[in-house]
Image (cartoon, rainbow, N blue to C red; front, side):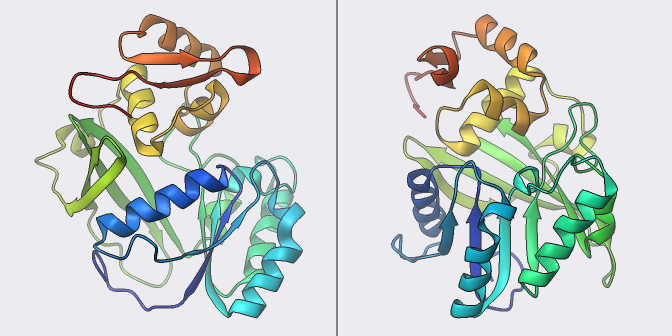
Length: 257
C-alpha cells in the first residue's frame, strides 16, 4: 500500500521479454525502492523468447500450486496466438488469461504512430476491465511517470497519477509521488524527440538493449533507431555487431547506466 490501496495476494510474474538475471536484479531494486528486504521474493516464470502459448501449462500449474491471485504478463506481444491486429487471436489470448487466473495484468506496447492505445486489435481494450496508459519524461536523473486510466468498467475514472523514479549508478533508487508541475511535457503530452525516448527507455530498463527491443518498446521504427543512435554517439554507446549489437547509455562524469 505504498502508493495506492491494495489487497495482498500471491502474484506470478510471467517474464517473456527479459533475461532471468535482469528480472532478478530489477526485483531487488524495486524492493529497495519500496523500503523492503532486497531479498524479498516474487514468484516468477522466466521464459525469454517464448510465447504465452508455449508456457501456458507451466503457468497453470504454478497458479494452482501456489494459489496465485494475480498473473502479470510481460508482454502481450508474446502471447503467441496469431496476428495481434486480428480480433480472433486477440480474443483467444484474453480467454486464455481469463481461464488461467482470476485476475491478470498484461503489459502492452503502443503503435509507433499513436501512443493513446495498445498495439493490435481493439479487442484487447474491450476485454480489459481497467486500462492504464503509462508515459514517461526524463528530467536529469529522474524519470517522471504519468499513469492515466483510459477505461474503467466498474469504477469511476480517477485523475492521473504522477510518480518520479530516481536512478543512481546501480539503477532504480527510489520512487516518490510527483505532480504535473514537475514534468510539464507529460502534462501537455507534447511529442518527445527520438533520442529522448531512446534514452528514457534505456534508463528505465537499466541495461543495454538491441535495436529490435528499443524499437518495439519506444514505438520508433528500427531504421530510425539505428539512424538516431549513429547521430548521438556522444550520449549512446554501441557494443558488439550484427545480431549481437546492443546499445547502452554512455557514461558521464556523474552517472553511468
